[in-house]
Length: 189
Ligand SMILES: [Zn+2]
Image (cartoon, rainbow, N blue to C red; front, side):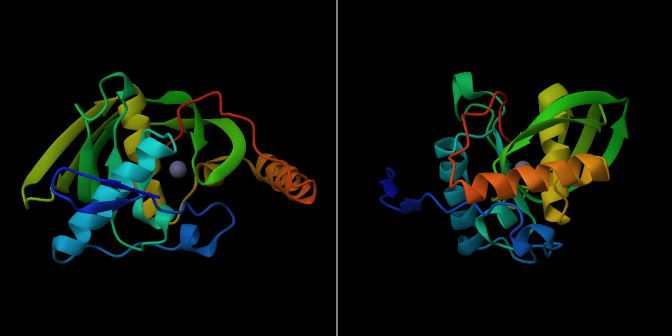
């Protein structure tokens, strides 16, 4: 499936890898050159995120082991607060927040995860500018969730072993019964 943009570049909605795909466990590499391929990957990720629909997506979720993420936590005004971040790093975090998270790479499961309530993230933009993003609430949660993906960490890894084990069993049962996941209750990140 592809969509033509105004500049006639073909944007591609990419396949999203799901747990337990091994790419989701890998630590992604730093981007050393923000070139056309990186810009194209980010644009494809934006299309894929909106189509899913989700509020965030990290490159490993579409099979690319590089440190880039996209986020848009404001779907009411799609694109207005879109973030495309290269080599994002959390430089400050404070407070605590419990948030029920879901993930485009984890089928049919949401669970509460403890995160920092506020984070400050440094990153590069596609046009090679170094920027800082401050996030609270959903944006803070989504930034931490996506940067986790770059380190091969899923929100499942923040849960107890018991909860993870129960999810694994649920997933196996779903696969055995070849069941489609019901629509999620929460925004997927
Ligand atoms: Zn995720």
